[in-house]
Image (cartoon, rainbow, N blue to C red):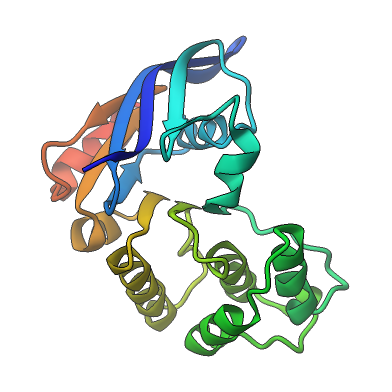
Length: 228
């Protein structure tokens, strides 16, 4: 099966602050891949490098067979990215935010957006400033999913979501993956990886370790945090 993500010897430094060092990662097409690690371990740096938002010192990254630097714009057309912080113009209505995200791509996503809003119970009439953290997260999920991309990249997506919405979120991921998509799930929540992911890796101090199985016990998982 082809690789959706292929990272080879990625290194990104921030001077005195930790970046990532010699990261090697392969995610196969059709995978739901768990990307674990404590805050500051380098998960977001890796993701931003993948998507062309950061310049890195050494290494090579291919996304869906395309070079992350040379083919940056084409890659973004085929990726649904949800950052850990959902920032929107506070005075905009939810419906306008979702439509704007589609318009930026030059796509009509109205039907898929409607289905997603219905599944996630998104009130499209409210203004962003009227929403709780969880409801802002749901808007961000809709924006990332509505164009039915080939690759989903979620950075801490379920924070603020109640258990029922978390369930609906993963049901949606499974449905898109069944249709041929791939998902990279960056998370702190071990139970999510154990339940939903086919493969997984964990980052610690800017270095990545592939896990032989996504089923990792609490003791092993906590050891990566305690040794930080």
